[in-house]
Length: 396
Image (cartoon, helix red, strand yellow):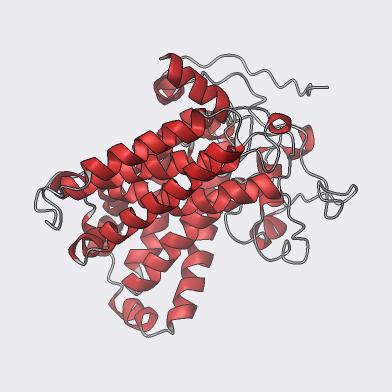
């Protein structure tokens, strides 16, 4: 336990105590590589339990083995760099030890190569690949181009949000069932054969754009309902309870909200006959955009702000100020907020990089406290509502 506390303290060390060249970033990367490697080994040894059917091809062609070897080599190099540069050897030694254990444990593949032939599975491979690619992309970007320079990469709530990421990935089978339920109802009650034939004949790129436009329209109005209807807001307040914004903050969503959101967006995607490959591309875009718009990245993106949702646009949706209440509901295209009168992008001050517009001062829920912890937040919408406290006093 003492080692774990030291490790967490090192990860959450303030930014001014881990400057560039201190070996902290390489140590954190090595630890991430070790953890990803460990989970990959579990997936490879027990694919019948942890292989998502849609990713079975990655198991059958040996690609996951290649990814595992690459991750372990990268982690080993990062751990060595951290051991050389960092005065505190906690990150480097822990990561190195974990990588050695993973390499030994992974030398015997067990069931490796077997496909999922069970009716029950958990999406551990889905979680691993998400964290691997999204985490390795956004952690350095947030370190070098932060919107809030004082914010640490591993902020106080990162463990809680990583657990959200983990649960939603592991229960992907349940979410898929709930997602397809409304679509199956629509396709079984409405004859859309002519529409499906026409949509399926459209160029691939056009289909992807149409999926984004159609789903964004539905998500815009669902998002507004989540903010307007008090009972629905208690589910959505869980997402807004994050007081720091980064690439992990988007994962903090109540399980029921995820199910409803995916179910609603699945209706146009599957009912109208879009190419399954176009739907897969859209899903990848959604996962990337969710991390990107929540990320602590202070880039000046004013040239594309009128056309695409950016981090600053979505950060204003999470802002605690009075001017940030119930604005910027769109997920992909800000023109929906312009059309329906909820667009807010103040440009009266320069942004964190000396350019661009103003960002919110703070984030969170102004309508009353949301409890900490996954399970308390899971039951929060079903608990007795407290009187609303609409005070907007911000930290000095």
